Every structure is written in structure tokens, then in C-alpha cells.
Length: 307
Image 1: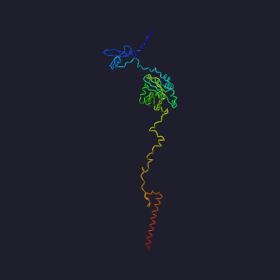
Image 2: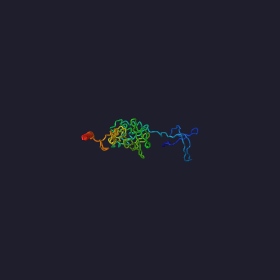
Image 3: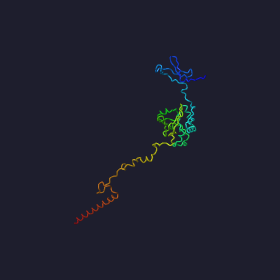
Image 4: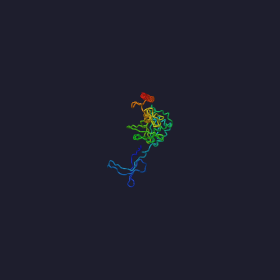
């Protein structure tokens, strides 16, 4: 006769304790296990239908909160099956896979670019990255914590990645639109395309494009740079910049006015100053005229005297 195994993990063991107390435990708990949960008070009773009681501790079936061992999660195999072969080859060659596996025991989130992401036309030449930069790039695609999609949707502000260190922020921003989640780097953005595995404490996603951190902009094309105060202005800015005050201000502002020059007798008031040659000629003609008048006057006096 065949025997049937009955699953009793959903059953509750209720035991009368000394002092009028009542204890509760999972019926699947080994015999002799402590009854950690006890009756506190009655919350609501609807006779013959519902009875709501308050107890001191949750009633947990054995193994219900057990987390899978990190060794049970084959990151490479999962990513290859998800169409991320190029990404797998990079994390294996650089040793970053070992970092992922170590983090998976406490918490790991991976954003794996698909093979199509590495064929994008605007993708920078990754062969120009040295080993340290490549490691940082691959660490930038992971978080050292478990971040399911629901958690990402409620994230406010930048989030740190495995690449975050004192030399650079290497952070990500998250934006949502309905059920769609997009990661921003400050240089580019990438949409979470699918969930490969979500088994606490590990969650792995595929993303549409490579996540490019601004910290590696020396090797990857960057967005328009923001001019710093130390940079010299561009020609266009220089052309529009006002000239120094000294260059544009009238000379009378910085030099005293010339002393007034008396105009020759008979010149109209307010007439412009004569050239230097004209003044010299006037200076010569005035004595000559005086001498002629004096000679005529003497001649007239002598003629009167002789007559």
C-alpha cells in the first residue's frame, strides 16, 4: 500500500502553557521545539465565523526564510542563456566574475548589456581601455546589494555601484515610466529589458545598452564639456566680451584738459584753434604793423613841426 506524505508546513500547533498562557508554533517544527509565539489578546471575534488574535511573534515554518546559497547561482550560465555572451567573456577575462560571486552571498544586482549593446554604432572603442579602466567599467554594471525592480522604482537620488570609490562617484540614477525602468549615467541611459533571475539576495537584469560612466570620458566620447573658470574663453566669447575701460573710454577721462590758447586779435569767438604755422605768422606780423604805424606817426609830427 502506497504511503502519502502530507505537507503540514501550513498548519499551526497550539499548546496550553503554564500560567494560563497559550503558545503557537508551526506544525512542521521538530518535536520539542520552543514555542516562541504566545497569545497576547483578542482583537476581533465574530462567533462561528472569524476570530482575530494578537500574538507576540510571527509563526514561521522551518526553512521558509532560508536564502539560496550563492553557489547555487551560476551567473555565467544565466547570462549566456540570456544573450549576454560578450559581457560574460569580459567579466571572466578581467576577474570581475569572482567579485560578483563574492558579493552574491550578501547581496548582488547586475545590469548585463546584451550582445546587441556591444554592436551599437556610437559605442566607444573598448580596446583603448586599460585593465583597471575595464574593471571599473564592469563593476559599474553591478550593485553590492539586492535591488529588485520594485526597489529601483522607488529609488530617489543617485545610487552607488561596485565601482564607486574615492577617485570617482561612479553612480547611477533611476527614472521610471509605468513599469519601465531606465538607468542614467550622466553620459547615456539604458533601459532594463528583462529580469534574468530574482532570487534573494541576487537579482540579474539585461539592459539595452552599455552603461558608460563619465569618469571614463577620457576613453569614451563625452557630452559637451562645461567650461571651467580656468579655461580660456572661446573665440566667439572673446569677440563679444567688452573691451577694457581704458581702451574704450575717452582720453579726457584719464588726461587733464589742455590750457586755453588765446586767439589772435580779431578772430571770432569760439573759432577753432589755428594751426601752429598760422600762429607763428601772426606773431611775426603784429610787431611789423606796430613799427609801420610808429614810423608814420613820427613823419607826421616832423612835418607839422617844420611847417
